[in-house]
Length: 293
Image 1 (cartoon, rainbow, N blue to C red):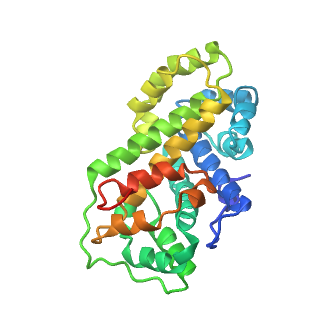
Image 2: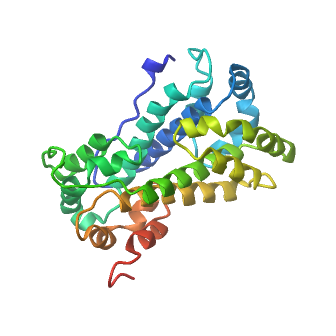
């Protein structure tokens, strides 16, 4: 399938998470990972080898974690690639990461006052702040407005907002660790894991071009001393996906009372339904909020 013909796994704004929506999140996460994997390859030969070996080294373990290997392999084995291309891969990772975040955002809150919460998000999220996390702000904001049944506001440029580099660095680090664990989790033997570590130094530049912390990717892979069990890999996937989501939403607005409003309305059970550690996200968002438990 050519790049321009990739299946669009878009987000439909609904009020309650369903199994289909969880699959949508997983499909988009798998696609994002696949594009990062393809874009981080150093040579065409490496891309070809990765494609040839991916069934043996990855399909079974990735599927067992709940990922969708067919979406991972799609960009890696795409025959239209003449060579590894981080520039080509980056907009696709942004596209799919946006769909992951948006689906999780729409399903993170208590159903009791879902409409008013979505309207609050529609009014309060700042485009420039979301863009700092390489999220398509208009897509995410429009989804909240549609869920609330209100019209999307013009970009609130009058509300001055400045990207917090500490927050975007924290996001980059969490996303880098998530990618590293997803990559390393495909290793089924000590030998495969050793090969991943030995080659990891070659991958410092490419992930950086993909807006990841390449050094942290390398360190994370090489710190894994034995193949990850399915349970461990699944837990790490959930933990770091949750860290990514929490970092974005915590820093998506500069409106007064933002953290308190989120803290009061986040629903851990609802977040679990879209692949997050709901309790961990709520604890992170409620940190520092007076009266929170």
